[in-house]
Amino acid sequence: MRKIVLSFLITLLVFSGVLTGTLAWIAGTESGLRNGYRVAALIWPGVVTVKEMHGRLAGPIELEGVHVSWAGGTVRIGSVVIQWSPLDILQGKIRIGEIKAEEIVCHIADIGENTEKVDSSVLPEVSTVVPVILEAVRIEKFSIAGPDMKSPFDLNMFFLSGTWHGAAVDIQRCLIETGRFTADVRGSFVLAGEYPLQLEAEWLADGDTPAGGVLKASGTLYSLDLRHDTDDPVTTSLKGSITDLPGVPEWEANLEVTGVDPTLPVRGFSGADVELRVHGGGSEDTYHLEIAGIISSDDIPRLEIQGKATGGLRILSLDEINLHTLGGVVRGNGSLSWEPRPEWNFSLEASGIDYGQLWKKWPGRLSAELDTEGFFDESGVNMSVDIRELNGTLMGYPLSGSCRSAWRDSVLTLTECRIASGESLLQVSGTAGRTWNIRWSLNSENVGNFLPDISGRLDMSGLLTGEGKLPDIQGNIKADRLKAPGYGIDELEGDLRLELGSGRRIKAVLQGKVLDVFNRQWQVLGLSIDGTIPKHRLDLILGGGPVGFSAVVQGGLEKGNVYHGILDSLEVNGKPGQWSLEQGTEFLIGSAVGRLDRLCLADRAGGSRGCIAMDYQGPGSWKVAGDVVQDGGERRDVAG
Image 1 (cartoon, rainbow, N blue to C red):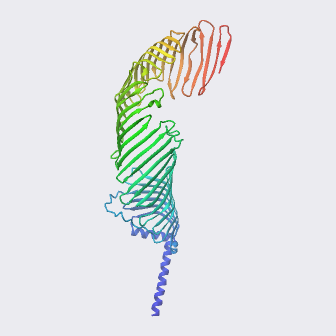
Image 2: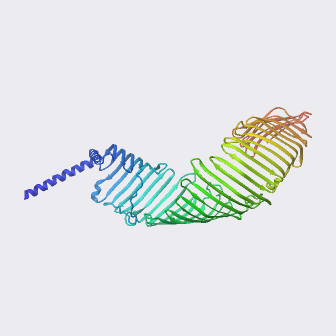
Image 3: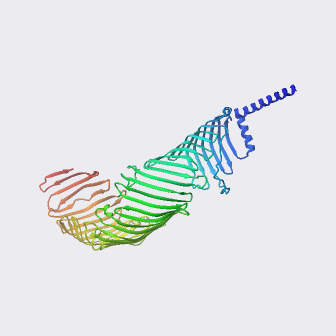
């Protein structure tokens, strides 16, 4: 019996030694790592392939060209390094010092819908037998794509450190970077019971207008409280709750907006004072919203907002909208939907709008009714706006109007657009876009109906035609007894032909009689232009007054909207004598450039002569040089 027991013990000892040696060989040598991989490949063929491997199973492990394939998709990993100590399991734990992976590409396969019913009232418990310690998991350049994703989701960097003990998970730090967005997450949760959790995430979006905030979540998956706060560029506070997240979720939230960064580069929000409150609630399929607040700034008038909305997965119905501003109110309702494509439909009514608060020279009140609808598709936005009725007062005159407009396939169509103020009527109709065919007219017995400090009769009409981005323009003007502070003209007639989209030709004629300029009167005004936009001739005549002028210019418009010309002739007649230009003079005029070469006028009746040259130095600054030679030969220089 002793021999049997002794033989058994010796056999067990030898077997243990062989097993220990085998395990040590597998875990502690590169050959063991490679043979372990071969055995795994035989058991699970085609699931995992590795191009190159170095190290040992006990760590460190270096793998390159890893490819994992399963029914749910594939994962490709450029390289991965694992630092860990499997012997720590003898101490009752698994410690992973570092996992560093680069260039991970994940493709999720389309496996169809899962029709299996899941009992959401009971959540599975997920736990580990021994504690798992992750000191550092770092992934760089991660991309995931799936059948329902229009474009891959890319991560620049992912970092995770934490512990998993039983069902309790502690996230010491989880850092996510994608493009210009960064999120830093900390907290804990338990994968048992109702899944209690406590998480906090700080995020930052770096762009032209940086933004950031803090999101906090606490509770369980059956009763979860959320809070989200932002300070820049908009100060907001969101408090909400979600119940029964695994089953039929219901939510309720309150949002407060209490400030806007004064440096925010949005027109109209300089020094903005914002107070908005939004309350909402609902389930997965339906929800309701209520909004109320005030917006005012240095650039826009005070606006009081009230509204109610209800919606679902595919549509949002704006049941009530009230906007109080400029002493009046805008009321409306409508809907927004996003399946099968984004669409909208709104009806608005405005009454008692005192737009004179914005434009002091145009006092009056306005009321209007309009409908708008549209949608987005591959061609872009398609919409229509129907101003059914526009009425009110303008500068004490009755105001009325209406217009139907549509934007379809990048073409604007205006139908029966008219606006009348007193004895003035503006009408526009036609199409604009790829093809132009717009006809317009303005007939006014008194332009003072819509232009402050101006009076007189004015008739204008025109046509925009052609193809391309810019149209060809035809127009004419006829005016009688036009008067403005310091100016006036008894009769004015003109015609214009300007080809912006085709041949770039220009032809214009303007003739006037009895021109008054600050109590000086001329009997004749004449202006004509003939040629092309970059090269044409301009003739100007001003006669029958204290001083008569006639000039001829050869020039044109160059790049940067700079007018480059040569003054070919200039005649000045009047009490000072008869003066003529000695020679052609070149000049430039632009928003940031200006130059007049030396211009000399000689008195044909005597020996007097005057010259001047000008050069633009900057906003409001010119360098001027000139001289005057009188009959007796005396010369006087002028500079400034």
